Image 1: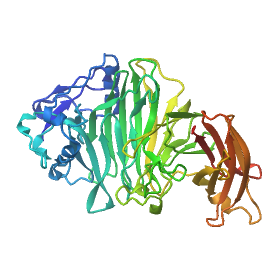
Image 2: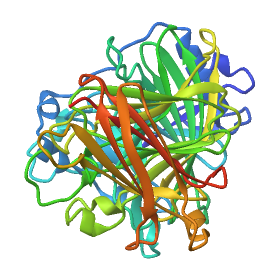
Image 3: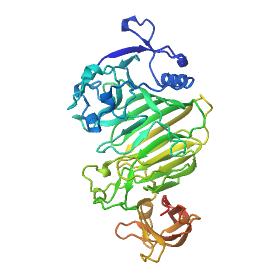
Image 4: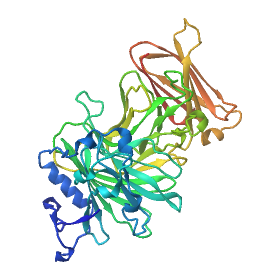
Length: 515
C-alpha cells in the first residue's frame, strides 16, 4: 500500500476546492488547514452544479464474473490493516472490488496535523485464497468498501464493529451482537412507480484517531443522478454502538422522494404471521417491528409483515423524537437458528437532533419468498425540501442496540398473535391477541384492570374486545375479534391500554393485508 498526499485550498472558500497532487511533503509552503465536514460539503455543492458522471467500471473480466464464494475468498491481510503498526485502538480493513461492487471508491486518511493522504489499492495487501488470478494485470482496481475494528467484547481482540459496503449502505454492531439490518445514507423514490435510485458514497476520509480514542470520525461524499451529499459519521463502539451523523444534501433535479435516515431489514415470518411452509424455526427476521416516538411522547408499535403484495404506509408527524426498526424478541427459543442467531441482531434507533419539522415516517413492506432478501424499509420523508442546489441539513444519532432498547416508559407490546375467530369453517371473523408488559401495568392495584382502547378502520368491523390479566407473565392481554368489510382492502387496527383516562401503554398499530 502507499499514500498520495493531497492538500486543499484554504477555507472558507470550499466551493473552489480543487485537489492537487504534491510529490514531496516538504514542498508545502502554506499552512495546512484541518480537514472537516465543511470541505466535503464544498465538494458536494460543487458536484451538484455539474452534470452527473457515471462512475468508472474498469474491473478486469475475471473480477466482474467472479462468483460469490470466490469473492468471499478474497481477504485483506490483517498485518496490512490501517493503523495496526501504530498500535491505535481502531483499525480498518478493506474490501476488494468485484462481483456486485464494480464502481471503486476512493479512501483517504486525515492525519493528525490535518493533512490528507490518499490510501491507494495494492493487490499485495490481499489474500486471494483459492483464486488463481493474475493480479499483476489488475492495476489500481480500487476498493469496494471497508470495515472498522475496535475491541468491544474483549480487550485482547479488535472486533469488527462497522462496515461501509455498496451504494450508501452501512451497518454496525454493539457488544455481543451479530450483523443484521442495515442503514443507508439516503433513500430515493423507494416503492415509487418510477423505480428506486440508489445514491452511492464515492469517496471517504478516515480521521486518524488519537492513541486513547474511543470514537472514530468518517467523512463521505455522496453522488447520484439527482442528488449529492456530504456526511460525517462519528462512531462510538460499545455495549450499544452509537453513530452521530450529520448530512448536507443537495438536489441536482427536483421531484424525488427523499428518505432521510433509511433503515433496511428482513422479515420472513414470526408469531403474528406463521411460516409459509413447514419450518423448524418459529421466527425468522432481522427486525420484528417499527417503533415511533412522536413529538407529544406517544409511542407507536407496528409489527412487521411479509405481505403478498407491496404495502406502503406512513405516519404523519412533526419533529419526531425517534423511530427505528427493532428486534424486541431476544429469546433464542423463539428462533432456534444456531447459525443465523437472530436473537443477537441489533435494533436500530434514530434520534433526530434539532427540529426536523413536518413530514412522515414511511414504512415499506415488500413480499419476499425467503430470508435472503431485505424486504423492509423505514425512513423519514420531509414535507418541505430546499431549493435546487441549496443544502438540506439533518443531524441524528443512530444507535445499534441490544438490551438497551429504546422503549416506552409505561408499557410495550411483547407479542401479537392472530387466527380465525371461532375456528369454524363458516365463521369469517378474525381474532387477535396482543400482550402488554411494562412498569405502568405493575403499578396497577391488584383489583384494578386497565381499559382497552380499540379502533378498527372503515374496511373492517369490530365485533368484540376485552382485556384480562395474563397470569403466566404478569402482564395484560387484549383480545379482539373483527370481520372484513372489503376483502380486497387492508385493515388498520389500533389498540392501547388506558387507566384513569390516561394512556398507560404504547399504541399497537397493525395493518392487516388482504387475504
